[in-house]
Length: 282
Image 1 (spheres, rainbow, N blue to C red):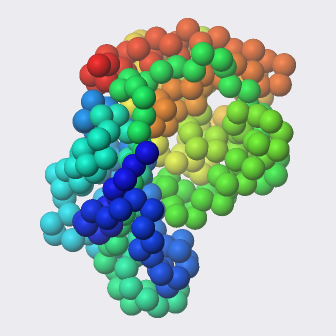
Image 2: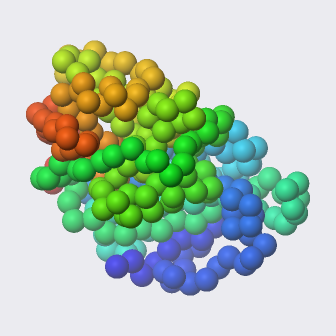
């Protein structure tokens, strides 16, 4: 359990209330977040996470302080884990626009916090039992320019998680308005058919996940063909393997969608490859 958190560069007791009701992230969802895996006191994908922070702040027109650099971003995460005594952890960075105002902000400066929670293992571990996943029918995702970022407005994923729990599933596919798969409730989706690994194109409204980019890169080195395309629920039933990815958990293989059952040979091989390639094994 964590005992310390970071708030605008200051270490404070975990759980201490620091936001008021005029906070723009709270009032308007005027912000974003980033989830990262700390492995053996290192951030293996620090560059990828920092690049996404700079892209989302540029899009939201939030100004980063001059002293807030990739190096300091990474150092804050390492110091936070150290003060909490964690060797392996899930780090969550939350950014928001400072200042008051209504829809029109009075400031464009960055406010931020960083929290962490312990993880048992440094490496990614493939789930032993395949996930049971179905299509979410309660709502759809509307592709917009900011869809590729982790916005503070996470209602589509909250509703998706509620649908998942209600139907006693492990996760759910979220569709766009045209009926194509955009992503799962907190992960990107991949399908392996033959020697082709396909993932929904980001034009469907999915998040440009850090692990998504790592999987696309590393899978290609293992000799499979890569395709970013429109993926329909029907395509899932023609796949040999299906798995979900995010930076915290790595690869999670899907065992069943409806009556369809899937293998995990490539999921297992790719997990081992990423662990080895990025030095995640203790």
